[in-house]
Length: 423
Image (cartoon, rainbow, N blue to C red; front, side, top):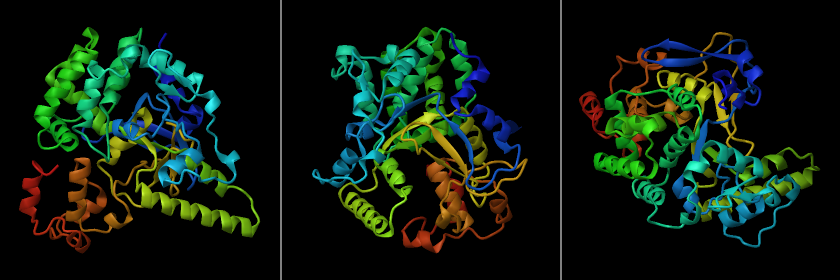
């Protein structure tokens, strides 16, 4: 039997703490929902810990042998296995192996399709929520199976660095298909931020490129062949599929897990004599240099998920993205899909909890350059107090951007014209 609405927020590890700290309320029709502090929150304090309603690993990430639990995205490699693969040093030995929390003996596979999970609890949770509808059984390696054809088509349209996954949409559909109370899940998914028709097309353009209309039609056909359900017929129409695609593109929160990162944090917490500490720090520094040389920036098991509470501050933050300093940090320190939201500054009662979509250097650029970055990467224009106060300033491109070769010669007229094409 499906849980009542309030019980879904027990998905947060400490739901009583969540509701004593924050409240979600509607701001207006444009901004939608926002999250506000109910009491003073100190810098460094955990605001809440939340798990997603549904999540999925990125398809290229999985293809490149970043092995993750198919339910919670926990890295299935030990820290040492992870470090060896990423650095290319197959004889590497990590000190303090007890700081690695991955346990191979707990891993379990689906007996039908052999998809791997980090433990029996994750296998059962996936089976209960969506895996019965998605399990391919002996067809797991059949390239002609509709689900495999859908995944292959997605990989050929959306290349690394990945920001979304068609499998997140597939798991949404499969969750509803399996549920006894389908209306319950449909109501949950309906709470996520939606976009206008033009904005939905912009998101599809951003994720799929110039030929997005033809690619979107192909994806919809494959999606229908693989997953169609009469109870969800509205999601399989051209407009319904575009809206579902936009929902995932707008609300999907990136997830990154790493057994190596968890091992490093464990080592950082060790109380060691000075000489041992210096030796360990030098070892870790060199390891990351070796990894950067061999692998580059792709260190984690990566995916995306839909977080109910997290979506509240994201929808609001799209209107207030340059609030400085950024008020929180979202991270996944448990090497799984649990999102930890930590305050980066003191937050007063009644203050809205917002995100900065730009890093420290980008925030120092001109208003014109900041808006260009936000429009191209996040598909919105910021209306925070700083941007509004600079609206009369000349639309000049920051020197840093000119040095990168971006935005040369753009004027205000160019910016207005680009809003329709440069996404």
